Length: 202
Ligand code: MN
Image 1 (tube, protein in one colour):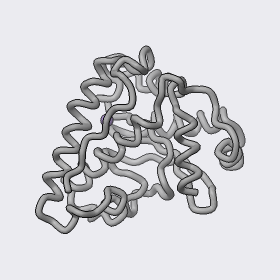
Image 2 (cartoon, rainbow, N blue to C red; image 1 turned 120 degrees about the horizontal axis):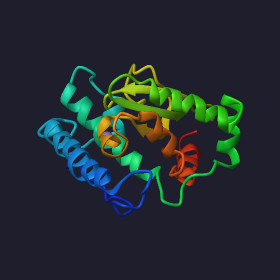
Image 3 (cartoon, rainbow, N blue to C red; image 1 turned 180 degrees about the horizontal axis):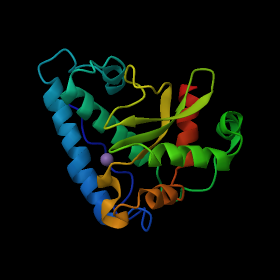
Image 4 (cartoon, protein in one colour; image 1 turned 30 degrees about the vertical axis):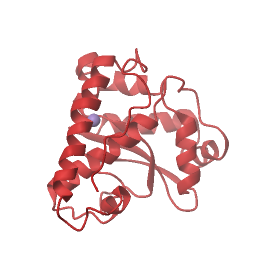
């Protein structure tokens, strides 16, 4: 069964001025759509055709670059759209906030560490907030379209928040100013969704 490009949960301009409409449209209709089509090509006529995307990621053959890049690209962007919202921003609350305070000390300390992971990822990739079984959270980053669920990425746990730091995610609006894009991201984080993912995967 082929994977389908998930519907974007808001209009292209919904996250303005933090993410501009043109970037969102190209990112979704070209990049995410491309990863989806190429993932389908990579699994066609293989025993992966009936596997869930989570099982494909967890059992990834890291030497299969077409599957690794496009399976990651498909899943990472599917997650990314949901953890942003025009009604986002602010701070997490409840048990997620407590887990983050336990791990990082404060919300500001979380922001500093997460921003640093995103800013220092050389080239293209993602920074993540992941939850481990038992509820502990950690920050890490991966290159390209790798995802913490894949084997041996140096990241562990289940990703509940991610920021895309590929230039295609910000260059039209921010050019080379990746730190400005990272700073803007905090205005649109959908903490309700992150908390839901925390609860489901802790
Ligand atoms: Mn992207």
